[in-house]
Structures are given as C-alpha cells and as structure tokens.
Image 1 (cartoon, rainbow, N blue to C red):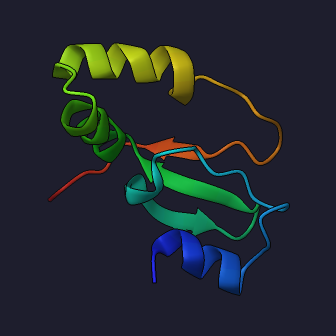
Image 2: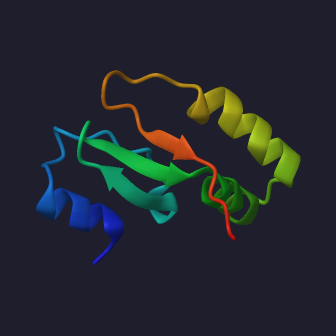
Image 3: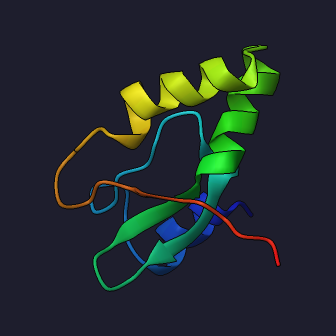
Length: 85
C-alpha cells in the first residue's frame, strides 16, 4: 500500500483531496485539519533529477515556478523542507 492509497482509504476519497500528479513517491504525510497532502520538496526535486535527468538547479527552478507556488484552492498541497537531525 502506498501513502496515497492510505490517505484515500483512511481520510477521504479522490474528490476531497488534491494530489500532485507524478509525485506520489514524495508524499510524506497528510494534514487532517485541513485535508491537505504533505510533500517533501527534496523528494520532488530528486524525482525530476532521476526521472527526467534534470540537473538539480533546473529541477528546483522548474518546481518553484510550476508546482511549489501554484495555488489550486483550499486543498492545495503543502510543500515542506525536511530537516534531518
């Protein structure tokens, strides 16, 4: 079971939650207070670097412009920086 499947099974159906296409492997959590999916920015960048063979800076620029700063309504995903202590 993926994290996306878990969210859909335990919290909502597909109409209640906004997922970012092609970034399911970057999901790290879910905010049940406002029904928003939480994604790792670093994992999204790594997905583009591997899948699309983008250099890191290009992947960061692409995601900043096309994904991280896009508003899709009240259920817009949350994009977080993960800190590893």
